Image (cartoon, rainbow, N blue to C red; front, side, top):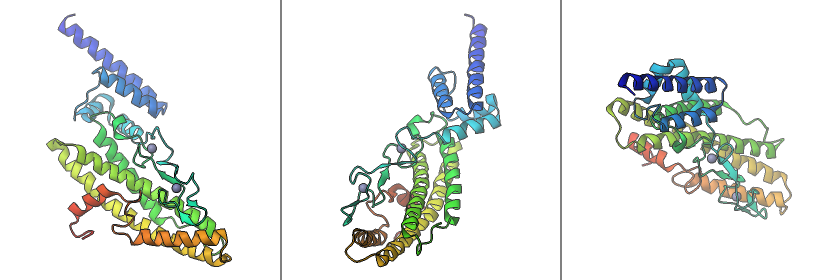
Length: 291
Ligand SMILES: [Zn+2]
Ligand SMILES: [Zn+2]
């Protein structure tokens, strides 16, 4: 085949691949979009370098590229639901005989999924090379928005009337906040793992780290406040119960456990609510934090 013939064949292959990608994107099939893109990237139809985003913008348009990145950003983890799985240590009870809080799940019955780091989203290995930073920047933006919503969201149930409901609400808030903080931690990890950051992206990388750290500080503060609130809910529930009953014993154990968790240094040490990489990044950015 002549050089011109080869160029034409490649161009038509690229055109077909792009059309197929756009059609799948329009149908809203995120998993299929990812599969198609990875397949064509492996066949060198789509690029893999740092210019992949620009290449897509030039060939597919700004709008479709943004849509594609958003689809990749919301791809779910293939191993869990919402970043959680049932705690095997206590079989999802959260306690042992109402006397001891299960430390693996902090009495919450579920633990963080190791596969996705508790984000509930597809881990970095599934995100096409050349688009990872863009995808994680969108995830960071989404997490910031979610945290802002969670900061405003009050606990629905009234503890005095329905302490069990209020406790459940607190658990939901903790899970939701932790999921978003995990997304932030992941974004910091992606930025940190880029060993050779090209100059054109270095500003973006430090911006991502800075934003993630700032949003996480707000999220972690709310997390602590929710646990503090949960302690008061346990106290209230214990007061309602007759001493020595199962519920009474559990509420006393919970109160003791959550109080010690809140007082640990750093906060939530050795639990899955502790996000070491974020704390480390925060120390570098804000030297006084934690010292
Ligand atoms: Zn457990
Ligand atoms: Zn997962």
